[in-house]
Amino acid sequence: MIELTIFPPYLNCRSASPFSMKAELLLKMSKVDYKTILGDNPSKGPNGKLPFIVDGNETIADSHFIYQHICQKYNIDLDAGLTNQQRAVGTAFTRLVEDHLYWILAYSRWLDPEFNRAIVRFFDHLPFGIRQLVIKAANSTVKKAVHHHGIGRHSKDKIYQFGCEDIDAIAAQLGDSSYFLGDRLASVDAIIYGMLAAIAYPDIATKMKEQVVKYDNLLDYMKRIEIEFDFTPFVRSSN
Image (cartoon, rainbow, N blue to C red; front, side, top):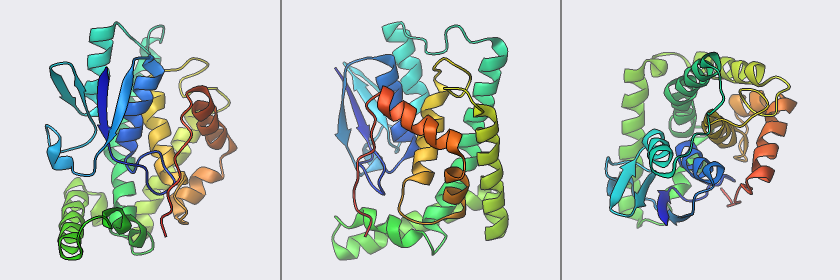
């Protein structure tokens, strides 16, 4: 059985990480047997990040390569039947979510004082002195990362403008379809769901959350996936 190590539930989400939610949802969509292991130390992962899987003698990190492994070993292709154009759209939106919108989410969690009081509670299990050092190091790492990415060089209002524009594009592409690329499930649905949940479910008012919840099609889409794949978010207080 596959062992999937992910960040634990937090902020009313199944996991604190959209990539952890993506990886687990891909396993559920693929109907392979797995069990989750809740981890809170990314340094234990093979590339210093979570999620990762252990499948027999193989350890695979990164949600993208986890899915590739599932496809190759278990003869699964959630994208079978998609046109080349649909595959291109899925790839483009995956990059938008993972390489652009994600960094805006990271900014909101770590660098926006209206939000980051909640995210630091994720480390409450650590001893006081160590906790403060870990929080400071994480904050510094994110600040440098979003600056080097480029998104962090803008004002707060402009950063959230970018994020809201990304959400508008996601809502427009989804339209009235059941899934992101039409009426059939595809692998891109896992990361679209994971990111939307990470933005919409925390009990904290942010501009991006406001942008997600104003779209009925996005909220219906999330509920549809949760029901179909028994993926109801876990609830953990952020207070």
